[in-house]
Length: 203
Image 1 (cartoon, rainbow, N blue to C red):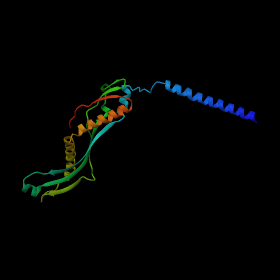
Image 2: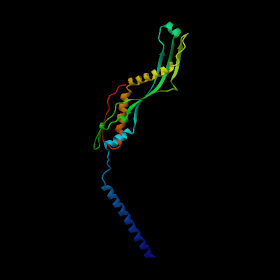
Image 3: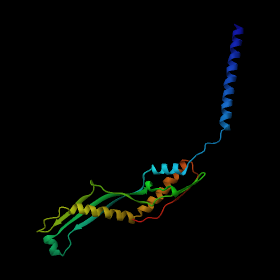
Image 4: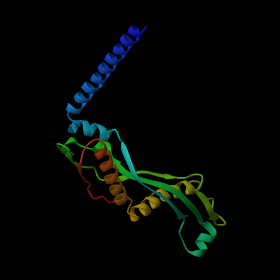
C-alpha cells in the first residue's frame, strides 16, 4: 500500500513539473513576440473613412415666422389681398460628404497621418410638418385665394431656415466637430499624430 502511495506521489510531482514547464515556455514565447503593430495604407484609410458616408457633425433646430402673399396698398389688400403667416419649424444638418474624399488628400508616415477633408456643407434641411403650421390667413373681399400660397411659403421657409443656420455658423461648427470626431477615430486605429485640414466654406 505504501509503495502504491509513493508511486502515485511521484506521478503527481512529474505531472506538476510538466505543467509548470509548459506555462514557463508559453510565457517566454509571448514575451519574445514583438508588440502589436498597425499596417494602415492610404487605400485602407480612405476605404474606412468613405464607409462613414455623409458625416453629420452639426444640427440646428430653428423656428421662423414666414409672411408671404400679395403686396399692395391698404385698399388693394382689403379687396384683393391674400397673405399667410406660417410658423416654420425645421432642422438643418451639416457635415462632410466623405464620398468626395480623394486619395491624394491623405499622407501617411509610419504612425502619423495628414488628411485634407472636403469642405463642410448643408446635408439636410427639413420642415417638421407636425410643428410647422399656418398661424393666420387673410384674404381680401374679392380674393379667390391662391391655393399654392402655403406650399410656396413652405419653400421660402426652407431657404429662410438654411440662411439662419448659416448665420449661426453651422458650417464652422460642422468642421470643428468633424475634426474632433475623425481625430478620435484615427487615433483609435493606431495613429499617434493626426493632422486634419478642412477648407473654409460658406453657404
